[in-house]
Each structure stands twice: as C-alpha cells, then as structure tokens.
Image (cartoon, rainbow, N blue to C red; front, side, top):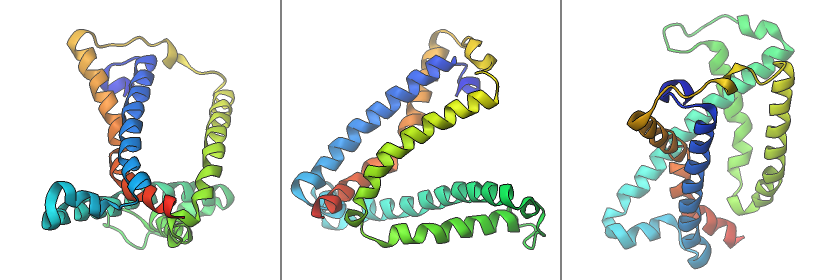
Length: 205
C-alpha cells in the first residue's frame, strides 16, 4: 500500500483501521439478523430478492466461499511448506512431477496437506466449535504482538520505512487513502455476508 499509493506508513495504518472499522460495522449489522431472529442467509435473501431471485445471492455466496477457501488453503499450504522445509530442508528440492501446470509438486503437496489438516475443523457445525473462536480471540493478538517484536529484534530495528514520507499529495493522496480503505474492506467483504447465517448457527447452540 505504501509503495503503490505513495502513502507513508502511518497513513497506510489509518487506512487499515478505518477500513476494518467500517467492515466491523457491517459485520455486526448483518450478524444481528441471524442472532436476533434466528433466520439464515437464504431466508433473509428472499425478503429482498424474492423466492426465486434469492437463488442468485445464495449461489454467489457459495461460489465465493469455495474460491476464498481455495485462496486461504493455498496460503496455508505455503506455511506448511515453510514448516516442513525448516525440519527437512531437502523438501525444497523434491522432483517436480507436474511441469507446465503453473505450480510444482512441492507446493501442491503442501496445499493438499493443509487441506487435509483443515477438514476436521470444517466437519463440525459452527456452534460446536464456538469456544475455539473464544480461544482464538486471545491467542491471535498475543501471537501477533510476539511475532512483531521477534521480527523487530531479528531485523535489529524497525528500519528506514518509518522515516519515509508520503510521495503523493493533493487529490492523488486522497484517492490513495480511499484505495487503501477499500482494500481493507474488501478483505472482509465475503465475511460480511457470511455472518448472517454464521451468527444464527452459533446462537442455535
């Protein structure tokens, strides 16, 4: 965001906070429908799109969920690859049996391992693992802060990026801020829709 839009680090930080704040407002509003009235996303969609028209947003949400899970699984596969390579460095040099596929055997095996490891988590209904989200709410911020401190120590300081000023001004700066805010919101766009029925399932438990 800093190099692409010409923002300084603190301006990018403001964009992230504003974008996530806006997204949180919509997450709470859409989640309230399921939490209060105990109705799922397909039912809510019918109030706006009609009986048959509601099929489109339901299909759209299902398709986006599949795509988003695939993206997350590929990112998770990269993490699995790094962990395996840290234990067995030879994993980085395994023979590529799928040339010309846009990927390689090493990355695809890592993707499949992450997918297999995530299956138990998605097997159970959401309301049965809701306490896992409570634990996550404490563990993730703590781990994030610890990792940030570790990275600063390993890098021997924050580095020169905190001293770099913004390179864009005027309307270009304003649109850069808007782009940064929208980038943060887009990261939660699917979650905003999912929260309707997610909250309903959690409340049902």
